[in-house]
Image (cartoon, rainbow, N blue to C red; front, top):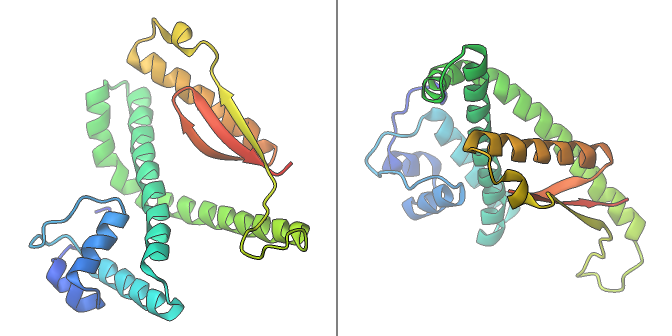
Length: 219
C-alpha cells in the first residue's frame, strides 16, 4: 500500500529495465541504507524502475563519478530512514494517547494506520524539502558573495560561521531515577527546545544525540 503499486520485478528485471548492472544496483541499495534484497524476490514496481532509469540518465548526463553519487544518495538515504522511523513512532505515540492503547497495541495500530497517511506525508516532505533546499541555496550564494575575493586559494572556500554546543548539565544525576518512557520524553523535550531556539535565530542543527546538540550559525 505504501509503495503505491504492485511489486512485480526482481533484481534481474530491474537491471534489464533501467540499464544499471546488478553490481551497481547492489551498490545503490547499500548507499540508500537499505538491507540487501534477495535477488529472486519481487520487491520492485514500475515506479522503482522509472526512478532508477532517470537516475542513471542523470548520472550519465552530469558525469557523476562514484564517490559524488554515493554521497548524494547516502545523504538522502540516511535522512529519510531517520525521518520514516520518527514518523512511524510519532503515529504510534499519537494513537496510543488518543485511543488509550498500550505500547504494543499502539504500534500494531500504527502499522495499519500509517499507509493511509502516505499522501499527506509525501506532500509535507516535498513542500518542506523545497523550502529547506531553497534556503540552502540562498545561504550558499549569500556566503559566496560575502566572501568573494577574501581568499587567494580558489580550492578552499573560507566559510566563516559560529559553532554552538548545547548539553544537559548533570545528565546522569537528573535522569538517574527515570524509567525508559520518561527518559525518552526528557531527552526529546531538550532536543525540541534547542531546535526551536536555534531555528528561530537563523541557525541549523548539525548533530544531536542523547544529552547534547551541535549547531552552526552565520550570525
